[in-house]
Image (cartoon, rainbow, N blue to C red; front, side, top):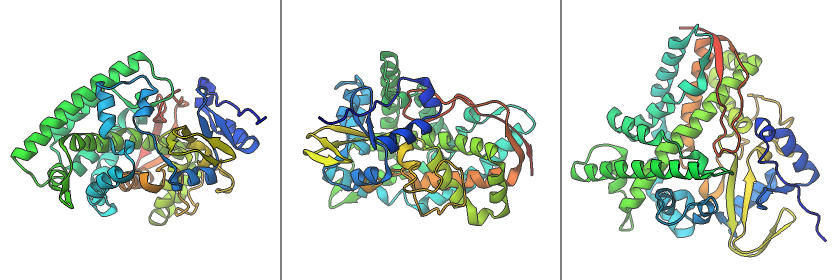
Length: 403
């Protein structure tokens, strides 16, 4: 009889406060685990990489949110129906090819001066506060960056941001309540209605912006449908704000905890900025997990999977696997930045906005190095429990501003 897999303590607040010792023990002693719902969980790098490379494992679609209580007709359900993250095979390839040209490292470079200026202004404005909360204030930076990237007006960006303020990230987490469902449905209904108005406005009066170019994008006579345009736009907008602001907050936090690493970055910013960003992404990933399902019965990681069986990869597991990283619990910006982490996933669903996120994070790291001295935490941040996007409740810091 096969040994029962250990259960990840996802209902325990202590796990979310610091999951890495628990993940390390499970990864070494058992290789895999299961969630409280019985979903098999992957913890090692090689197994996580294999899932993303093997064709019999595909991204979870509508069943992912059905398991969280959403049903046809719900705004979030209908949004997910057209989301690029829920598509596979030819549908996914078609959507991806139509938007890839707009989300390149070169196109992302135009947000660099925006990020650089806004982070500097933020640091100057709050210098001497003694309790500047990064978590509360940093969100404006990726928000303004994505507005610049999408080339929408400040008023349009503010309207989208206001409608998204109700929150939706928790709807994809491991513990969805009716209150979370109601809030997410209200948010998605408002956002999709407004973005639909933006699409119609651009059809009537085209502009030289990304939304107009997406409307005009065509491949082999195929264009994005109205629903695909709306969902893709909100995908890019929401994904670029919540997870990026989370990692930005983590960057401040880890530099405050590791002043030697921040000093290293100051000593050679051009040489080390890429490594600094990749290390923050590895050490503090924006998402807690990545979901897949099987297309046929198969074996992986010493486990048997039935057809259509879900499987989750706990990103903190492979990101701190000693088989891939030396001393993985050490925060070290001198690691080889080409030894990528699992934070942006890999394979066909490699994060669509990773180039934009990396550009924003690099400029944030450079601004911290250039414009702060004696950076320190003034209180210990607390990681929130049972969320999809990893983030702390607050991150209060103190520093001296350098013009």
